[in-house]
Length: 197
Image (cartoon, rainbow, N blue to C red):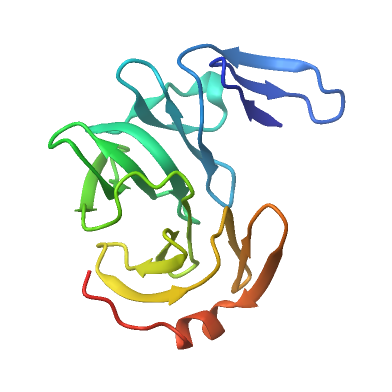
């Protein structure tokens, strides 16, 4: 089991006993995301300045790799295959708040492959997930905003505010602190309205 603490500890526990197997300190961790196969992890370190890192499993055998240009993350998502990481948050240069996609090449290097800053600035009530067909679903300002991996806007669906998103088996789960619903992705995709970006 992996957990991350505000005080900065990233920890791995034995699932059967709860015994601590590995730990790493640093700036506090606010966001933690993982690929479907649990091999690729992304998390933020809120040092001064902060950063977003990607790390392969097992952690004790792989060093963290900082994603160039990220300062802080309000939402993170790793795609199913662990080859793309979406970051909604602040970038260092230029100083903006927006959405970025980082892609891992065959050598294992991560580079920013797409960026957009045409979104609401600094909404702390944001969450994000990748679909199985590499679309990014961003819950922001009481709407689901859908993008392809190049961050081309594909559509928008007005919803109540969402605090968590999950995607598996063709189903999108959307929830807040009190309620949640799981719906087939095809039903969501068929109800999208167009957006200008």
